[in-house]
Image (tube, rainbow, N blue to C red):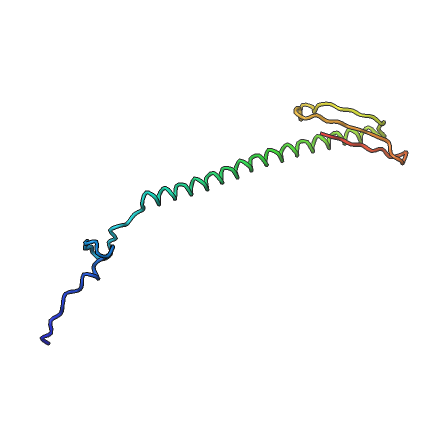
Length: 127
C-alpha cells in the first residue's frame, strides 16, 4: 500500500505535433480551421460548378425558346394546310407570303403539284 502513483504522462494531455513544446488541454485542437489554400481551392471548385450550372441554364433557356418557335411554325403550317383543304381540289402552282397578325415574323411557301394519279395532288407547305 505504500506504493506511490506517478502523475499521468504528458503524452495523454498533448494534441498537436510531436516535439513542438506546446501543452494543450485534451479536446482542444491548436490548428483548427481552414488554411487560405484550402479556402481558395474550395472557391475555385464552387466557381467551376457555378459556371457549369449557368451554362446548363442558358442552354435550357435556348431550348425552350427554340421549342416555342417550332410550335408556332407548326401551328402556321397546320393553318395553311387547313386553308388548302378548304379550297377543295387545288390547282397546281406555288404561293408564298408572310404570316398574318398571329405569326408576323414567319414566312410560308406552298407548292401544289400533280401526281401520277389524276385525282390526287401533292401539297408541300414550308415555313
